[in-house]
Image (cartoon, rainbow, N blue to C red; front, side, top):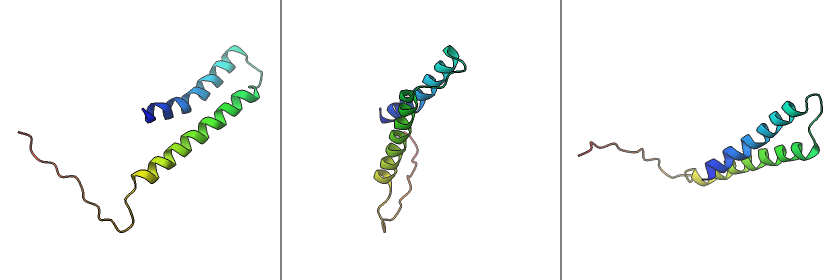
Length: 72
């Protein structure tokens, strides 16, 4: 679910910009559309940073790779 929310946060401002350019060519996007894009980028980056920090291995911890076994 968090991946879906991150994808939406990334794609919605892009879709909004493309719709704006399609229906109002030659006009600049409104401040709210630009602000929504900035907020989406901040949310995606903070989510990626949080995920990276939560999934990292602790300092000094030994990495143990996964072992594949034959299925029965």
